[in-house]
Structure formats: C-alpha cells, structure tokens
Image (tube, rainbow, N blue to C red; front, side):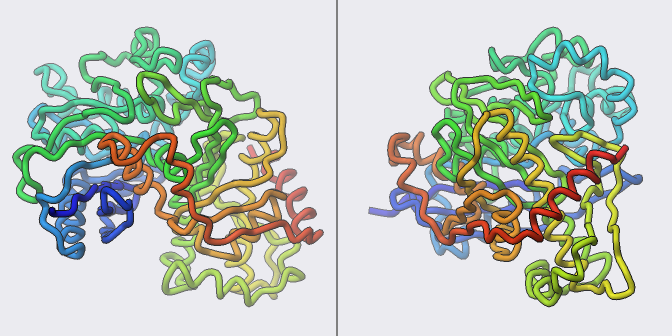
Length: 492
C-alpha cells in the first residue's frame, strides 16, 4: 500500500515554504523555501506581487515533491498557513488588481490617527487597536486610491482577502472563497465573540461584506484542488491558520496559559487564554488562536515588527555578515563591558506591542570610537530580545502571573546567544523544540487531525525538546533592561 503524505504551504513575508510530512508518523521528509521580491514603492510602504507569491508556492511544491521522491497523487491533504494582515485585491477570475499590501506597510498611519477616537468604542469587538498593521485600513486605502480596484468594485468583480484566502481561491480554481477565524480576527472587521463579520465594523471602514470570504473553523473542509498543473484534482484542503496561530498550535500550546514566541521577520509571542476573551490593559492584542468544532479558543499576542529583519539589515545594508547565521559568531567577539551603554532599537517600521508608536524610527545609540561590528551585532540581538521582553512583561501583567517557561521557534531561535539573552532578560526558561519550523508543522498537525490520523488529545506528545536556556542572573542584563524600558517609554 502506497504511503500517504500531508503538504503544508507556509506562505511567509519573505518567502514561501512547502513541507511534506508522512501522514502517520508526521515526520517531515522534504522542505523547500523560495524567497520572492520585496517591493518598496515609498518609504514605509511594503508590497508583494500576488503573481510572485503564487509562483513561489507552485515552485516550492513541485520541488518538495521531487525531493521527497513521491508522486503528487500520494498527497492526501493540504494545510495552509500565511503571513497575516497582508491584504489582497483580486477579481473573481483570480487576477490581481493591485500588489498585496504587506502587514508591515504604514501608509494608512494618518487615517488611523484621524479616526483613533471614533474607533475606540469598537475596540472591544476586535481586541485590536486602530493601526496600519491590520487589514481593514489597507482595504479602505485600496478602495480610495486604486482605480483598478474601484472599477472592479463597480463591476461586482472585486474580492478582498488575506493571503490564505487568495491561495485557497487559486488552488481551487475559484471554487472556494473562505478564510478561518484566526486570520479573520486580524482584519478589524470580525467580532471576536461571534467570529463573524460585524456590521458596525464594516460600516466604520465602509467595506461591503460581499467583498469578503466566508469565515470557517480553522480545521474543516475548505475545498479541493482543481485545475492545477502542479497538483492533481481532488486533494482536500482541511486546515488554515494564520502563521503565528499555526506556530502556537505547532508548539502544542493547546492549554490555557501555554505560551510561545516565533522569531521570523518579526517576533510574535502568543499565550493561549482558552475560552476567555481577555481585553489587554497593557497594550497587547486579543485574537483568535484557532476555532475547533465551532468553538473559538483565544490568545493574547505581543508583536515586535522587526526581529530577523534586523539581522538581514546587518547583512544586506551594512555588509557585516555574509549569512544571517553568522551574526552569532560575530556578536560573541564583543565584550559586555563595551556594550553596557550601547543600544540597538530595531524599530524600522515603528514600535509594535505594547507601546504602539508607529512614527518611531530605528536607531543605534551610545556608540563610541571603540564600537565595532561585533558590538553592533551583539546589541542588535539584544534589541530583538528586549523587544520581545516588552511583550512578555505585558502578558505577565495581564495574566497576573510570572511566566516560568516560553516555547520558541522560527529560524532565529537556532541562535543560541539570542535565546540565552532572551532567558536572561525575561527571567523565564526558554524551551526550543527539535522542530523549529513550527508554523508549517502546525498546519501539518491540524490537517492530520482532520484526516483522523491524529487525535486532539494526542497533540501534546508531539512536542520534543531540543535545548533549554535558563537565566544566568548576570547583573548586566538587569541593568540594560531598566535602561531600555526608560528609553522606549520616552520615545515620541
């Protein structure tokens, strides 16, 4: 009997990844990533070509199947996880009307400032602040500024969505126009309680519900592949999760107060709050972790817009390193005595949670003639860890408890120095699993669950520890933490 496999499509900010895993053992047998072009039309504007995104998905799937040495007919199901908030506008035939506006994009900053007070009474419905980060402001900008979008709207030929829906639509040849509650909760248009598009929110942003996909459970029958030249017809797509929620699920954080942090382009920390919708008093986001059997599970989230992207900046703009992984060895060449008063604030796209200061710029402060590339590399890593620690502190305040351990994943979690810094700054045990690509692994688990090859009650056993980091109780980190907080709170 031929083996069966699950395909995970992990469509991220800088690239797309295809992962193939054995349906029974859940062992990953191939993984392929392709980067695609980042488009910067103006300062603080970030776009992606939808055609580039779908081509990268096609290419990675084809190569992953080839490297796995299997037949595409052996793939029985697909899970999709995606960069969230990134907003797509396309026709009913699936043609792009505009470049996707990426979650990092800040072009709607003035709109958000002007409407902040009017929105405040609606915040309890969304659990989100009015910020350019989220999808509804991007949709409104497209309706107000894109002639192609305006024309399609008049012709009743406009679809708005996040990336998950766009991929689903393309994979099913336009048969399925759906999203899941975790992605919908990031748009500013969904009521957290009902997990439905809300009339008052739609009216506020002047967006017609007919432009939007149907909201479904995160694990359900979303549709089947159809009319593709790289996959056969009839493969079921049965799991969709926003990338950070997928990582939470992949880390098997399915119990209340379970917490994880993913280090990718940005760093995102989520804690499972179960059935409780906790409205943060400390600048965090309230979101849907996943929806299972018509019952939503919620989370608190802290967002640092820049994490791995700061290391990429050292690589691409300053040419300090050849590869991102080289930052660790370079940073180790520095001495803490040289960096006591040197700070790297990685706020290239403003400050996210818990401060939400969109106009703040990135900076390096306190440098002297003795500051070199090693010192800058070190404080860059410290800046990433400190930004994450801001959200950790906010979560602890909202929950009223000290977090004893945090599960970590994402490419930058392989940086042992960064993880040790995180343990030192947060005074929490940091647990890194053997599989750090937990975003894609999360939808593999979800898809397997829907196939019946994995029970929800068995999820916890899928976590396997690779390395643990504990606080070294070095006074250096305590003092730098105090100075960091004072500085960030003073930023305008």
